Amino acid sequence: MNRSINTFVACLCMVALLASCGSQENNYPYPTHYLPVQLPGSARWSILDVETGQLVVKDAYDAVPSAVVDGMYYIVRTDGRYDFYSVSDPQHAVNAEPFVSVTSFGTNGLAIASKQGAPLCVIDKQCRVVCELPKEVQQCSMYVGGMAAFQNDRGLWGFLDEKGDTVIAARYASVNPFLDGEKAVVVDAAQPSDSVVTFGVIDKTGRSLFNMVNTQYRVIQPSYMNGVLPVVKGDTIVCLDGKGNEVPNPNGNHEAVDSAGYQDFSRTPAGYFIVAKNGKMGLVDHNNQVLIKPEHDRLIDLTADRYIALDDTIGHLVDRSGRPVGDVKFAHVHGTVESVYATRGFIDVDLAVASYLSLFGPGGCCGAAPGTTLMDMNSLVGGDPTPYVGREMLVLPQGPYTIQYFFDREVATAAADSAAASFNLDARVKSVAIVLNVSHCAPSTEQIVVNKIMGAMGTRGFILDHDGVFVSDAGTAVSTGYDKGVVTLMFYMNKADARPMPRNKR
Image 1: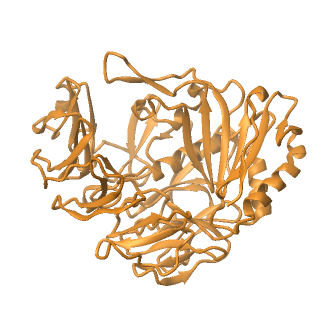
Image 2: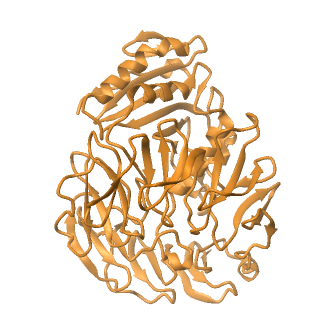
Image 3: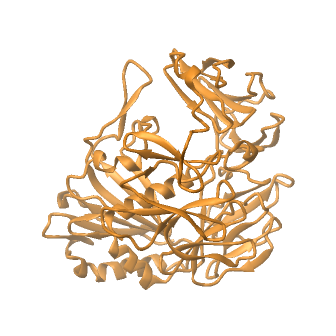
């Protein structure tokens, strides 16, 4: 896969993974009725009822629960395996045997999971197997809109239904969920050139609705919300309907808010605006009528009528009028749907190694080369630098791998005299890690993968230097190892920075 497609695919996958929870009827991706929280002074986790503001579980878990979807959530055990719980019985795991890989439950009451050495399967809320998926299904997303995205052994993506049947064949380099229940943004596996990427929109039967190229439009949010797809045309954000026609932005009614002189504002999926004034945050409607006064350090929307108000790092629930909901205070929350993809309980080692080797060469790794700066990769981080302040790494999913880009300085810096932040576009990539989790496989898998990678390094233009570090004539280097079932290959832009990787067995 060429560099431009790699970059574009990674960007699309990241947005899907970062979709936060909320009320589906108000265009939030997933409904939030319960919220895992950590109470001040406690090392354990509780679960808060967002509607009532009362705790349904107090200090019950050492590990953080996943986001609660349709009353179900999972917890990672100390051995890395997963147990599902229900808010109706938070003290006892629903499953009799632990799973090695899972997705969150969808609103249809189904999830995807696997056990060690076994294929993926669809399970219901009692953790009973509804159906087993074909062995060639390598990984699968959670159900969104009754559809789950899957990747086959050839790295291609398609969709299956609630019975586990393929309804859209695996022929795409990347897909995104049917968040609106009707349309999905996809990237074809075959592309016309290295510089031109064609992406398209399909319906739930797989029928193509329209196609476009990145030279005409750049996708900024690869999902339809409120009936439109926002894209960048030149230097302007425009909206496309289901036929690819440019249409007025239904979310663009913020003239009153824009003219009010706020330091910053952002629209919520419910159509309100979180605003910042004098370093404090509040909520207004599109006519700039104040709903919650700008008096909180931070304000985070959960649903159309539930918000987290943070003051001095302690949070509490308020409704859209700013009235407290319950009296529970919390220090930490966890409301993001993570581990979106479940992986089958085994891997094809030869295929995994071949995929690893295809991602790097003497000249670079995963689209980055010596001298690559953040400016060269700015399509991956979006327009808001705030989440990247103080970080020196970007993390992106790419198929079964996680790609970590390490820079020689922090990606973004906050201004000393304000809450504003800016990207450090001249920050250079100094190394790239390709991470593959094989903890769901037999205990010897990681060692086999690493040994095969080392044995094939010569085919990629690298020779052994010392202690498992391989170098190239281009001045780059590679080191690989594993720890607790996770294989990591580290690519160094400068071989002088290379260090041996640990090799710790499970």
